Amino acid sequence: MPASQTSTPSSTTQLISVVLPCYNEEAVLGRTHDRIARALRPAEGVRYEVIYVDDGSADSTWNLIRTFTRESPMVRAVRFSRNFGHQAACLGGLKEARGDAVVLLDADLQDPPEIIPEMVARWRQGWRVVSARRTARHGETAFKNLSAFAFYRLLDRLSDHPVAFDTGDFRLLDREVVDLLTGLTDRELFLRGAVSWAGFPETAIEYQREPRAAGASKYTLPKMLALARSAFLTGGSALPLRIPLCTGSASLAGALVMALTRRGRPKALPLALFGAQSLAVGVVGEYLHAVLRQGQGRPAYVISERIRSTIPGAVLASVEEVA
Image (cartoon, rainbow, N blue to C red; front, top):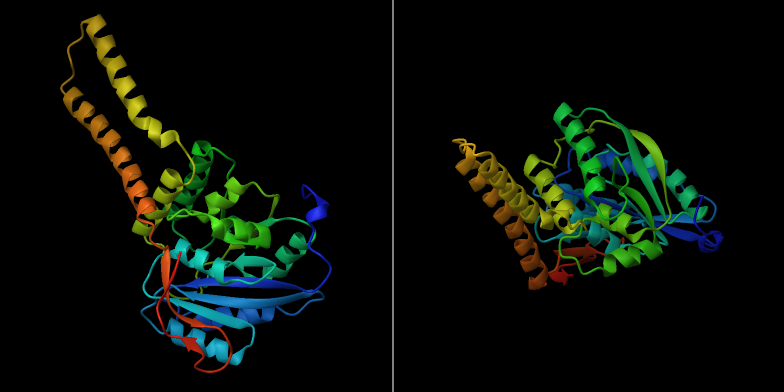
């Protein structure tokens, strides 16, 4: 149960914002919009808004989104000047959202919008974070399933705070949580780790993830590695900083043991030492790069257009930076 019932949302009509990051989703976006419209039926005390974030798509995604805004008063949209990445798109949507609670949902229909009303019901019971936990990942490769399984468990082991297993960005966040996340100054914000770090009362709804309805996954191997880098290096764990100390200590201990036992050095020893030194330098280099990005103070994304109303053509055309 929630830690405190005193934080339960009031019984008056509340606004729920649903944020959808999109990148080259023209093949599926029409079906996604239809399912969201059916799932978000007005309920007593609840109304919805939908915010599409076009993360620099090169196809017809933005044209489809503009059509949605003309057809429905509940739809708003922003467009990035280029592709800044999924986490930046999620953050941008959180900053645009006006709701008392915000739901993050990918546009590829792997995560079912039909469970959003249940998430809202849990939130109204007093939970500040309602996560969607995947019990199965249909239509994905064995490598993707294995790497995802290992990722969350390794992150939990290395992190300085508990991390929810098998839980992506599909979750509901209370306004208090949203305000905290959007107020952070991290330039490479790993949202899943930040939510866990905040420590708000959290519950989970289990579901089975479906295959993509159309198109190809935008989470290529380089993007998966970039997400892992952000999670492990800037997500709160201090353990990677200790890798150089550990490898150096192990190398010295090994050399001392060989000297005491008068064993000859194996031929591979110079290469092993070189590998340890390279690993240490590489880890330090990654941290220095993260520090550099943080110190540069650049915004996480740049908005080129924003649709604020349902009036056709009501688009803010000037480029606007958003930290």
